[in-house]
Amino acid sequence: MRKAFEIGGAAIQPGSRRTVDIPVSVLSDHTPVTMSAHVIHGRRSGPIVFITAGIHGDEVIGAEIVRRLLAIRTLDSLKGTLITIPIVNAFGFLNQSRYLPDRRDLNRCFPGSARGSLAARLAHLLMHEVVERCDLGIDLHSAAIHRTNLPQVRVAAGDRESIRLAKVFGAPVVLQSSERDGSLRAAAQASGVRVLLYEAGEGLRFDELAVRAGVAGILRVLHDLGMITSRGVPKARGRSMLLKTSRWVRAPGGGLLRVYRDTGDVVSAGEVLAVVSDPFGEREREVIASADGIVVGRAVMPIVNEGDALFHIAQTPSNEVAENTVQTIRSDLEGDPIFDEDEII
Image (cartoon, rainbow, N blue to C red):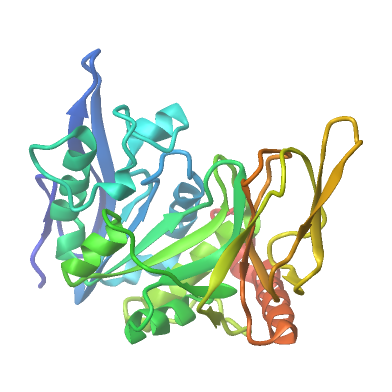
């Protein structure tokens, strides 16, 4: 018999699951704030994995991914331990804001400090109570407000195991990106814990395809780690594209944006992606693709200023392969019967 898993002063017995409220702080009006974690502690030993969402309070899609994940019955026979935190930054979530009350970005404050700012203390709490005890993490994000992202997993270049797991996840794109100082991914890596960073959808919005891709990807990774059986795990017919370089195409001037291309579209260098015009239509400026590639993110706000980031394009080895990959993965997600169950949708 395994030992109980202790977190936040609570003990979760083997073969059980429980939501634990870990105290974070008290607001100025004496309202307590907690970081709530749902822990599934299997009867049999196995890896310890964490799933976090809502580090940025306005990126709400991760909470829906966690909600649907926890409704899937195959987790009842889990090996090892799964820790899910659908809302890390409760302050930002309640205020529909990326930041904490002190205007700090939590994902620039790791590993944090027990005696630092509010953001530093929350970062330290997450690292100490959760991250440092795990073998792997999956951190769920969306694009910032007024932008949207194609489902993608970001990993550090040269980390073969992270790249392998990202491909197992099965999002259309695996994008190599450097770890930012102060991010959860960088702090976890320094502690010897790999983290897959999932980016999909738009801030303050749910996107059905992005949610499905997130749920399916997590299930595939848990199965690859031997934590769950293959029952109910969506099979991926398409293979993720490993892309190494990307760049933003920016607004040539301020005005009103008319978009011709969307996330997942494959574009060619010199192609017109959008037009920016003044409110009278007297002057129009074309937004031109600077290279061949796939649109992995774009602005959704029609009002832009000169220099605003409009289209995030990742270069692909073959536009034909890119188009086939996105179409195949979308078909898988739209047609998989696991997402038709009433308790999930």
